[in-house]
Length: 183
Image (cartoon, rainbow, N blue to C red; front, side):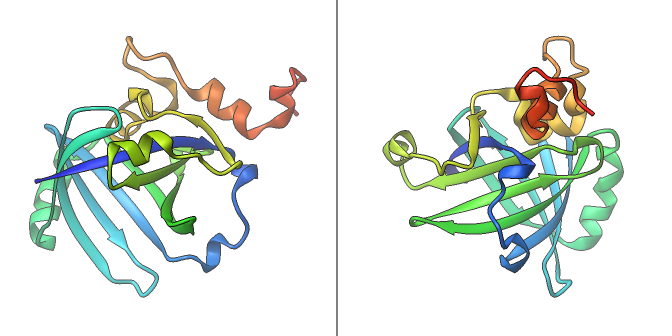
C-alpha cells in the first residue's frame, strides 16, 4: 500500500496544449464496485493491462493499493461494475519536472477534461503553480472523482451532489462564460 499525493484540475477542451497526439497515451476503461476500481488500459501498441485499485481517504492525500490482475479475473468481475463505468483517453505531458495526466473523458462524460498531477510530498503539492491552461482546482470536490463520475455522470444523480454539467459546458463554450446565448 502506498500514499498518493495528487491534485486534480478542470481543463477546457479549447485550452489543451498542442501535440497531444504525439504524447504517450492510454485508452482506459474503468469500473467501480464495492470500493474497488477495475481498470483496463490499452497502450499505443495495443498492449492491454488489467489492474485493481482500492483508495482510502479523499482530497490531496489518499492511501492507494494498486495491483495488476489476470485478464480472466478482470472479466469475471467486470459485470459487477455495470452502471458505474467510465472511458477516457489519458495523455502524459511532461511539464517543469512533473508529469501531467490529461484525461479526456468520453461518452456520457463529454466534454469533461481533467488534469492530474502527482507529487512526492504534501509541501510540493501545496506550492505547485499550475500551467495557465489549467482551470479550477477540483481536488477536494468529490463530484470529480472517478467513482462519482462513473456512477452519477455530469448530472450528479446523487441528491447530495449538485450537477456539474453547467460548469463543464460553460468551461467548454466561451459564449456561456460571457453570458451570451449558446449556439
